[in-house]
Amino acid sequence: MKRLFVFTGAAVACGIAAAAALAAWPIGTAPAAVDLEGDVDRGAYLARASGCIACHTNFAAGGKPLAGGAPLETPFGVFHPPNITTDPDAGIGDWTVQDFAKAVRQGISPEGEPYYPVFTYPFYARFTDQQIADLWAAFQTVAPVAEAAPAHEVTFPFDQRWGLKLWRAAYLQEPATDPVDGRGDLWNRGRELVRGAAHCGACHTDRNIAGARIVEAALAGSNDLPGGGKAPSIRSGTLKADGWTVSSLAYALRTGTTPSGDSFGGSMGEVVRQGTRFLTDTDRQAIATYLLDSEVGAATQTSAASTGTTTETN
Image (tube, rainbow, N blue to C red):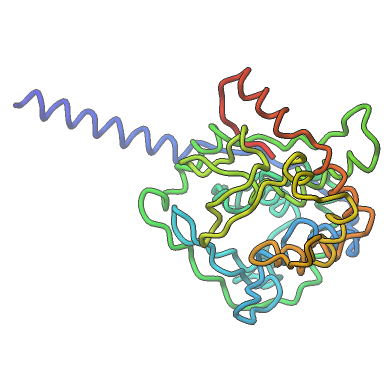
């Protein structure tokens, strides 16, 4: 019995030591100085394309712009998108552009803590310094709102942020947004938007038990969105089978109206109202062009079969 107590005590001590080491484990990299002059108009456009307004504004409750979004109900708890206005206490008014760059591209707070991946930072990892400068310039024009968003309602063990370091090590990777040789500028622009700023895969991809997107299910739809919502497949084959064309999809991204005359509802309706309708005709056409000719299903399934792994993808 004494040996059992000794063994149990040693195991507990090792567990505590491992947890302490994990909590102290530094993540991310120090961002290089972002000293470029930002363009407010370009930044506002990118903020729309990236869903910042749609996520961080609680329209249903009459919330002020970027003062905190509607709660997101997930299997891990209820998450409240934070206030990202220029208020120094409730928002990000005391941040530096370097703090902003690290948060957006790496998902790490100014205090060095990892953000929950309900924040779609994995899609923004390859934003350029100029894009960060533009976004920062645009956010500096937002009126301060001196009311913090509610705290996340997350229970143990998901309330232990240090555990997210393991999640990041297992699933986090940068989006593949580089141009593909042999494809036109419009297709490649669509690829950049879908896999990057527009983060289509955040909703239109199913997730595993750890909340990471499943590589072989990329853009194949999901029946488990926050709040019980659903997102259909937007793979090329499915879109074509459902009668979508480049022109009808681009039109739907501007108006929210489908080829059948129906309207997008739920979160997709919000995406159109607060995001894609503000894009240029060319960018909406680019998104439609890529989605209707992406072959993403075949490509990701081949990759998964060859590696036998499940990782973050778009």
